[in-house]
Image (cartoon, rainbow, N blue to C red):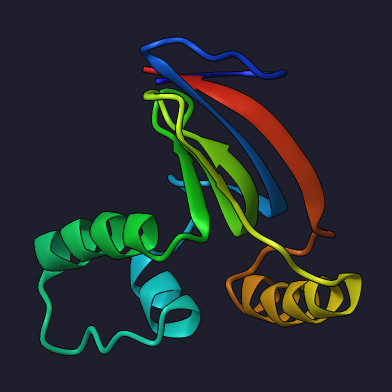
Length: 127
């Protein structure tokens, strides 16, 4: 999957706006991410279960955009996402709520060994 900056709409793409953090999938600890970010107990999971659960749960959380071609994970608050069928998913959040969400996310991200500020990311996923 490729991500392109800007908004595009056709049958094989979806666009997004997310505020949060850009992480390398290869550099993050999936077990820690499940436990600290999604509060999932991994004590009875093997390595394959952790891997599968990580991708399933992170995707279903509504807080993640994957760029599988570049092994990038955008974690945060999805503001707008358009589907390949033209459907638009939007959310509403006050700046105060967003600021609080980003403070909490920054603590979690820092616990995972990443020290960065949240940013606004936009792009189009070409499938």
